[in-house]
Image 1 (spheres, rainbow over the protein chains, first blue to last red):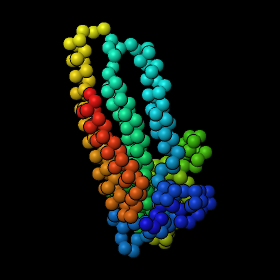
Image 2 (cartoon, chains in turn green, yellow):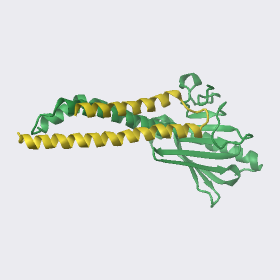
Image 3 (spheres, each protein chain N blue to C red):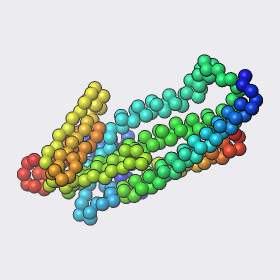
Length: 205
Length: 73
């Protein structure tokens, strides 16, 4: 299988390809071999983005707490709240197994949300594939010629430290605006889209 | 201590609630597998085998725990 998401072109400030596990890239310029569902034959991907991995930290911390709960929290809880009966061993075993399965499920669904929530810039359009949760996904796109304005914002200490932010792509009125949330190097993303628009229109935005 | 009859009723309720909860969770695990397949199709060749294995392991674990619950509870 070809390497799709690992950085093919190392750019200033992005992690080297060797440090990224296969397919887990979150800022990839001109990825080789990557194709998406509605991609035209003469269309090529210029930028492939995911949210900065730092957005996964709260879920990882939650999982750590949940993993530790049966060992540290539950015994304390049952010491404080005395049940009027002794819980059978079967219930304790099933309850503990289910707790660990649930923890794994929470972590897995959060990771899937990150992995499949992707932003693509091609030589023709910008694409936003949102995987909000297991039951809701959204595919939005806008041709470069329909883009009216691009802005980016980076709020907070963590965003400033890790250099990620939100890129807002405003399009013609009939098309919904496209938002790239928590993407790494938002300034570079804006710059790339602007240069593509310039190439297509032959004039600056 | 609560009376034996009430205790049996509590355990029965707990068993039903556990099985219903695990049943709902199995559906959730199944949806996760289906969504992974669909999203992998959106990104052609983009499916990471590790993720496919992880969602399948999650589904199998949910089925197994449901089976264990039927036997043990």
